[in-house]
Length: 234
Image (cartoon, rainbow, N blue to C red; front, side, top):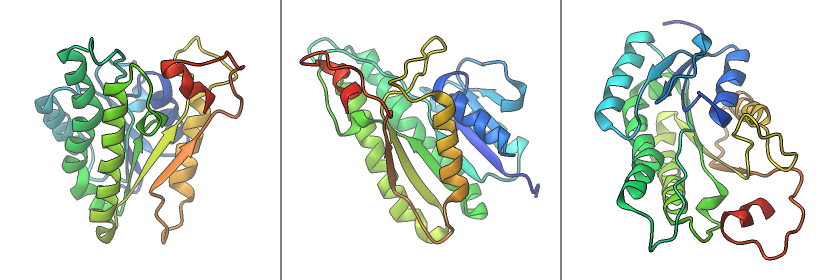
């Protein structure tokens, strides 16, 4: 078995996932990525995978096993945010939200558990403030992120005895777009550093179930915020 630590990360072609993957690579991990759209970074070991398709997930996991005989860390970051009023949100938006934000992490976890048990590894799930702070138009996003929170807690209860730890990292606003340099959002580099620090510095006899992080600066008060804008004020 190779001595280099290996991390499997979803959604590394941009945004927070890219920040996490690059921080892991800089910390000495071999990174393997699952991306629906390739970002073109050879050092991130991309495998094309549509996370809404269980068959594609199975094929991608088979490719991961062909590439490596160990996994030390899995970071489930990829998500979709379909917003809309309950009266208007269509079936496709609900299906994409459930399959990407909830079903895919469950299937990926099931498929990688044998390797994580062998290495005594860790799962990091990227959650959201939306899991507990609901807002108008956020039914699909909040519901699936709340479900993810439950999934992580059950996984920790079930697998801690097998040497596998799981942590939910729930951030506030992240500057996920390349053009977004807002001082009131968490930068993708900072979020990547947080994840690597959390994983690499966690004592072996300690499990963190959930960590919640926020931007250090707040958006200026704009009166009565509505919908997702309220999350910027947390």
